[in-house]
Length: 111
Length: 112
Image (cartoon, rainbow over all chains, first blue to last red; front, side, top):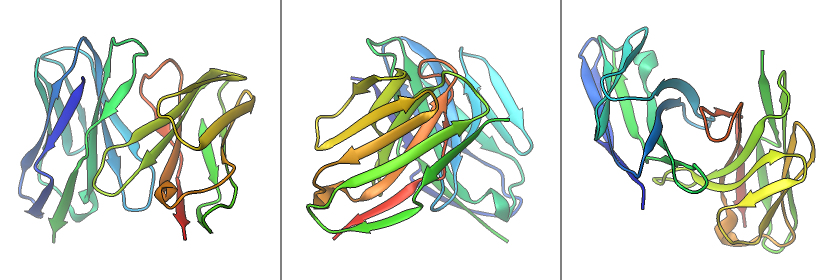
């Protein structure tokens, strides 16, 4: 069974304090790994797709990387507006090519 | 640009009452459409997905059903709601089967 585990569950940072969020996965045939940002009471917002180990994507203060077993979302010099829950999801080559979501990391950036 | 709408935004319904949630997508043709439920502290649970009009796949057996009467319209229904149906319901679309998905604003359903 495909599994996606995100850590930590919650992270509190001071403004400007860089850190990383982790997404580890156990799947049969990775066909893509997605990162989303979700604000309270809203739908997830798509951030990145990574397809192969060694790939990196950047957007403003966020940088996503991928290895064969995990992905990291690096947040450089975060600002309070980066506070949100960050979700990781994997697409596999299983029967219905479903996407499995992790439970997310809730990030709080303190001014 | 593409836009996805969901309504209503919030809903409070008694146990045993019917349900109809609607989702529409603008700015794209023949999207793949999805219904998810998100419970507190849990990952998104896929309920239904559709690759075309009248084509619905169900991932979890339950008292909910879905329909796709038009290319860009996806409806989630129930004849009789249960307390366990409470949650945050999200509609999403993608250009191809389970590629990056774009989510709507969600509907918060409370069954009392």
